[in-house]
Image 1 (cartoon, rainbow, N blue to C red):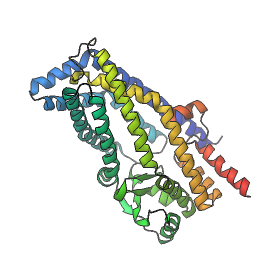
Image 2 (spheres, one colour):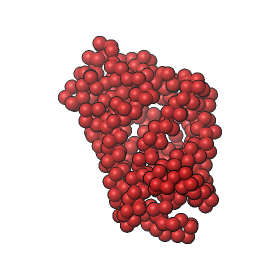
Image 3 (cartoon, one colour):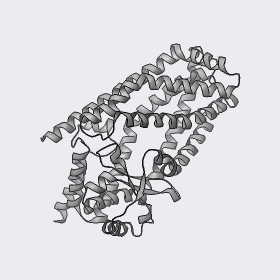
Length: 370
């Protein structure tokens, strides 16, 4: 094992410890709010306003700010310190803090209206709120997916057209017949924050695009970039964004239905006024979080399956297994990816196949085709 691979193992271990710590701290926060703090926060909000929707807004603001304060040490450790320690960050502490502030403000802008709508349904339709909330959540997911590349992503990263004639021709050739042109391929200035390389398919309809990080475009060969692009093209061809929305919609429906039953059973014993009591919001969050954790291995397995399909598509589309192997090797090294995690770790923490398995797929193709 090389020093780089050893560092990747340790980095992955640190990220897992952080995820577990965030889960524990978040759970303790929710439990403490349910048992002690939530009623007091509601009383403070009620003392400042008489109107129900303003009380809900003030409560959510206080709830989120308290959570951010409680988790700030872990956010700093995971978002800045670990990345800096492993030489993966190109951010200053000031720029990281500014990015976190923007993330917080954006979270509040998105979360407050959603909670307002949910608690309107809870007040007006206490027996059917979960069904209505699921519908709103699905619509919100579709809308957010559509506008994220043009309204939200630019708040954090600049997007520019890819300006490299030979690369443009390569990407255009790969995209031919798929309905996605070179005008929908953008360079993302991730290098201002990280040394990692990444790519993604984003958006719906007219906002659909492939995003390639500048770290990828500047540090990889054209053939390697072509492999990564073809992989993202696979997500487009196989309609993976739409499929992901359908899966998340089903999960939302089941999650809200479960939350309804749990809240009916527990709001009284816990001293809340009813399911529509904003003070019971931490209970709603706890149930949804527990459900999300329960189905996480299933979601990860489904995601890995989609990623394998896209790897196979990229190999078939390009016919270059050696370039695929080179791209995966470079991505794994640059991003400090654990090449061969245990099966247990893969099931719980990985939504992509490990680098080692992705390379093995290409090596099998290379061996098969000679």
